[in-house]
Amino acid sequence: MMNKAIFLDKDGTLIVDVPYNVNPTQIELYPDAGPALQRMQLAGYQLVVISNQSGIAQGYFTESALPAVWERIADLFAPFGVVFSGFYYCPHDPLGTVSHYVMTCDCRKPKPGMLQRAVQELHLNLSESWMIGDILHDVEAGNRAGCRTMLVNRGNETDWIGGPYRTPTLTVNSLQEAADQLAQTQVKAPTPV
Image 1 (cartoon, helix red, strand yellow):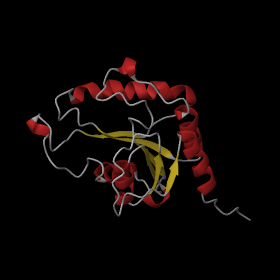
Image 2 (cartoon, helix red, strand yellow; image 1 turned 90 degrees about the horizontal axis):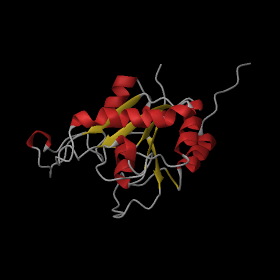
Image 3 (tube, one colour; image 1 turned 45 degrees about the vertical axis):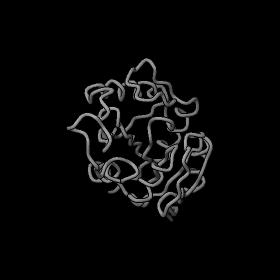
Image 4 (cartoon, helix red, strand yellow; image 1 turned 90 degrees about the vertical axis):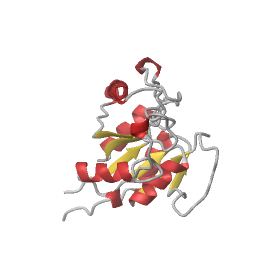
């Protein structure tokens, strides 16, 4: 059986964006993030974090710093009963300085590679899933993967460059509003007779 999922961008969507931060003590959830993800999970969605981590390619931190970040995020959501099914990240950047990570890849958003990998590994149904993020690269990745998309307009998108994959299914102003919209758009299964 294929499961539905919410793919979530990390910085600027779930947590306050502190550029290239891997210090767990500086990670702060948006106030509505816990209750909103709790509602999404209770509605039957698996929760999967999808994050570009170009700081690795830029030499600001190493991949070994990320497990503490994921652990801190999981700990912050634990009081709400929220459990993540996976954390996926892209360490690449074609303009990076660490040669091993300098490349054009299929995983760096706006490309859909991280979502596609999660679909295969977690047996997810894209047609019932959503990508939620705070910039249009998140939207494009979700649309390219084949799921519905939601832009949380926190003012973080500064370029507003359009394109065939850059129009979200829905635009909201908070994760709480995203949870409200998901509740309204869920297709109810027929009641057995």
